[in-house]
Amino acid sequence: MNIELIKTLRVLYVEDEIALRDITSSSIESIISKLVVADNGKEGLEKFNDGEFDLIITDLSMPVMDGITMIKEIRKINATIPIVVTTAFGSQNEEVEKLQEIGMSAYIMKPVDVMKLLQTIVESIAQ
Image (cartoon, rainbow, N blue to C red; front, side, top):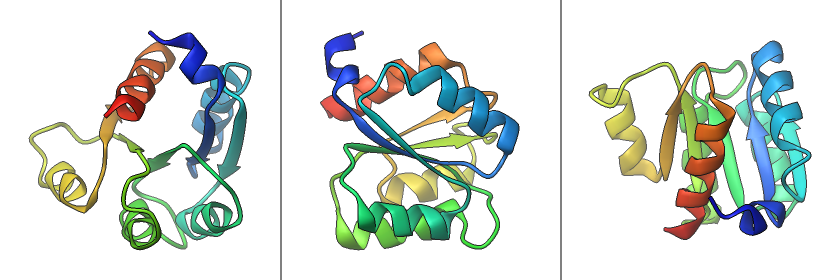
């Protein structure tokens, strides 16, 4: 794993589940350069527009604006930023196929394993 690369990253993390968001945020914020957190897709899109990020981590099912809609809007602005989706769906699910079509870089299953997430981040940035 490329720790030096991870240390430079500016990440937007969008998750509505407070406990998961807090655990994941506290696990990665000391490792990366900058972590900005949003609790729904609308807030995530607003923060994306207001900042500079190297990678986005997002949930799918959220209030106000879901992750799929947010990804579609972000892809209109930036077609290349890596987007990692946290999901309870497996790789055979139609939802994951749709996400790949709209530009998801990778996905990680919930509950999030932080080491797997860090590896997925490195792989997504390297693509």
